[in-house]
Amino acid sequence: GAGVSQSPSNKVTEKGKDVELRCDPISGHTALYWYRQSLGQGLEFLIYFQGNSAPDKSGLPSDRFSAERTGGSVSTLTIQRTQQEDSAVYLCASSRLSSPLHFGNGTRLTVT
Amino acid sequence: TQLLEQSPQFLSIQEGENLTVYCNSSSVFSSLQWYRQEPGEGPVLLVTVVTGGEVKKLKRLTFQFGDARKDSSLHITAAQPGDTGLYLCAGAQGTYKYIFGTGTRLKVLA
Image (cartoon, one colour):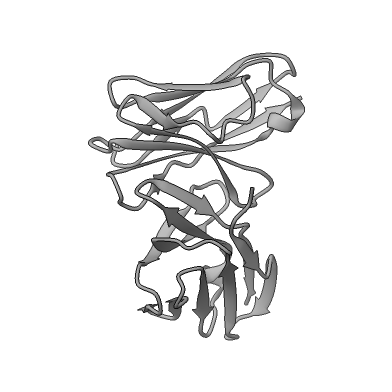
């Protein structure tokens, strides 16, 4: 597809379970970002990839959160031992360096 | 730490009215972007402003970047129901980092 694709679009999980969120960026976009959005508010930066490297992980809330990117393309955000406060919409964006961000439609995560 | 404050947080107006949304920070940004987000979708870029004092117009939307590149405003003339959504400003720091504002939820009533 032409845009950023995220899957699943919705995920309901029980507290304590692990979840994996996937992002397929626009082809040729070297930069990839993960953001978190709670209750339709502003976006909280989580992590930035340039190629397969993550030079900025400063926004990851705890060591339960991790992310990787392979082949300079697909990225996976993993949350271990989910907690209720992890419930939010997780947004992925990609871009060429120093160019505007293109966002996916997000994954809505609900932890029960 | 939230570096960009938007005001108002919520705004409900009648069709045809004018409105202004503000985005303020104590930090300097190399550029500033405005996005609009609709329910169930990701934010979509409206405009990028780069130069202090710059004004950009996009049909009924007017964007201004403050002289010191710390603040910005979005003015909508004669609002329409199709303008309804969440408006987000985002300041660029360096070559890759974008700090997003707290958001302004606009509802335009027909």
